[in-house]
Image 1 (cartoon, rainbow, N blue to C red):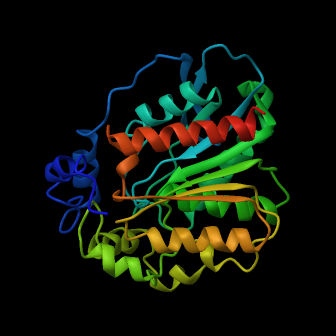
Image 2 (cartoon, helix red, strand yellow):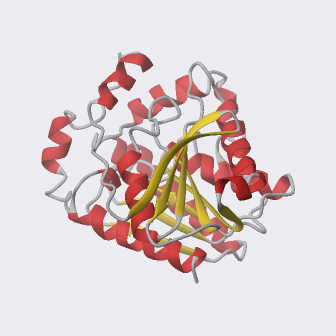
Image 3 (cartoon, rainbow, N blue to C red):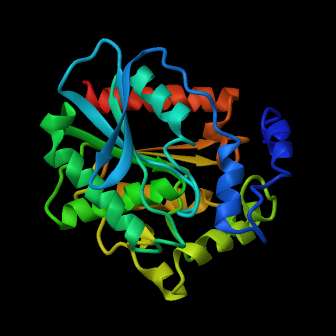
Length: 303
């Protein structure tokens, strides 16, 4: 189908794709702060800024719930170079309010100041901290999920492997929203959809990866490209969301298939007419996938 007509004026605000080429990370971060969506506190009991494993984090608790609650650790997108808990404030608030699950949004350190694998280790350290300090945080470590979008989806996928390899924490679920799973950029949709320049192009991906992976050979490392992981056994059930016109579409779907082939329960949903980043926008397709996300979290963590 054609591009969702509700996305067309939004893409027009960005000039088609996110303008990163020829800009410094600092310039792009400043630009992104102007696009922050206002947070609604409807359905929330509290929002609290905390420190998790030495990293800034924000905890969103839903109304009508009490400790200990299931917990969803969320890693924001932004190509490992931009993005913050402030950029994702509205998203994480609405996930918590509509799922009844406590959401902890983590601000991992960014490249190029902190290149690979530092964000990976930040992501794992935050997850381990939440599990270890569950009582202090008022959450239930036996009902712990992890997720994220784009680069955050990459980190979420990687930490599921690290948690298995390092003996914990045990994870009940993973949510991967148009994840960047193969930083070698080897799948056909990279060129097919990258040429469309709907929010993300091949050139902008190269800009992000160039900052995150100063040693280009690191793209083959499974901690950068979890599609290269040697084993997919023993990973938590997953919901993988891809977008029809996203350059990352094929690798996300390949990852879902690898999970399924290993025996992991997987739900894969390709959103027709959507492009990379669509979930952040006030459009019907984002509202529909939000309803699915929150329903899946409730089913997985609040059965």
